[in-house]
Length: 311
Ligand code: MN
Image 1 (cartoon, protein in one colour):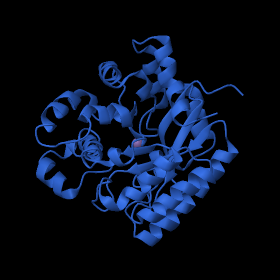
Image 2 (cartoon, protein in one colour; image 1 turned 30 degrees about the vertical axis):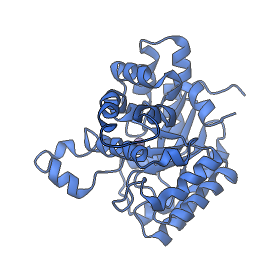
Image 3 (cartoon, helix red, strand yellow; image 1 turned 90 degrees about the horizontal axis):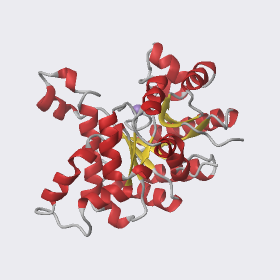
Image 4 (cartoon, protein in one colour; image 1 turned 180 degrees about the vertical axis):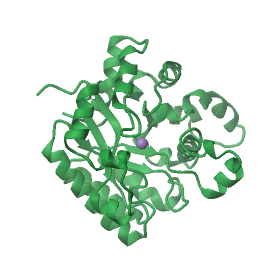
């Protein structure tokens, strides 16, 4: 079997049990999230995508009570495992974790990787208003480092207190136009200032949307944070050594140039954010982006193949 030439790594689905539990409404996006057959695969084929790394859609199993979250995450991962097994050359999985019970989440990550063959985990931002740098979540990162799999930190809606304070009169900015990015950028930088990467020096974090502006602000953050916080390494070094960025929903030549210059080409991976964003918009953009053919191949598949240890 030929190695995949185009891999998309932030692509979503909804598992039937979570769909029922969260009483999600029918609609065109939901129909795509529910599908693991003709609709999804045709859309991939039309855009030239060989392999999707699939993850449970926001809010996944995160904002449930601990017991329900454990049960739902397990059902979700078992369901995704079945779908991957049915199409092993087209899909691979990121685990859904029951964040409200961090010890169980670490165990579920290990089960998903060692028993189900998943290639990492995706975490949907904050959990009941808590950020991942808070100490109770350390067992998850400890396990991810031990298993040597990446954790993809995905946006979640910003907290209501922040939305009210910042965007009450500008609701259009609350979600993906600005709010989601602020949430994930904050999350990324908090992981660094919390000392997480001094504790787990091999830990790998993936962030979408070309880093949510991190590459652009990194110099200034590093320049100013050293005046107020002592850390063993420079702020930018933590980011460049521990983070991998994907192109999900950020198909901009100039943002790609900045991210590549700051991070190095080997840290950038293709993703779409299907079904919210069009597969063919993504592949059409990157196929024409002003970069070398070897860089294009690395972003489209080579870097993900290495990071996720795909065969
Ligand atoms: Mn997404």
